[in-house]
Length: 304
Image (cartoon, helix red, strand yellow):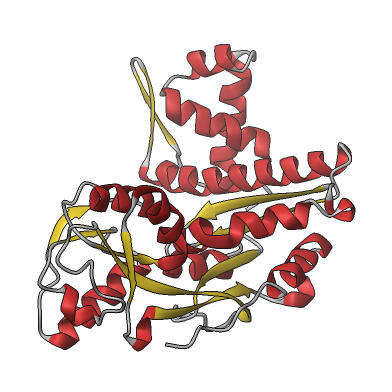
């Protein structure tokens, strides 16, 4: 199969979206016959019909649907490449993409990245960050979706290179009137008698809590499920449930709203985060600079 040009693929994707060649021609300021010619050449190149011509438009065949999926990926990559090159052309010397878990983003990463960008030599570097759960962070780095990933070191990081990052400590957060509020420290087992506000079931914290409850032979009772730590703390503030949250995230909110943050004594409550990447030798110079900066922020797990 000959190389497929991006313009034809872009027009093919647009026709699949509109289901109409004439409408696509109007949107792209090109005559319909030119689009039809490109589509015919595309079908000839792949050796199979891609579109079914209907009375009032077109629709992709099974082969067309498959090509459309690949075309969207290619076009997205091409657009990303164009943005990166445009950044260089406008004087920005590099861009680094990071995938990170909600805990990392909520605790320290934003501040660490801000400190990196405040260094005069780094002012022409752009950094983008995207939230993912730990398995998706590892998968994204393996598939090249980003240069650097930061997640809990218990994730499957096989095939990736790693460097240590920061650590945190999980704690029970309760309303000051709650029965557990008087404790200085708690074992997770002591919290299972009460209703919890929880994160989604596939989040790293929630998976760990479900496992711990299963080992203890007790159910983890969810009263509310929310999407982020701030929402969980709001539910605790309303005294509707208790929650397991990193102490580093909960403490500032608790100080403002009078909540109690009680560290867990369980060994798994101390978590170490890691920076992962495919190969340091292939990282761009800006990514290597950021890697070194983040590695310098690494902290060991705190003693129980």
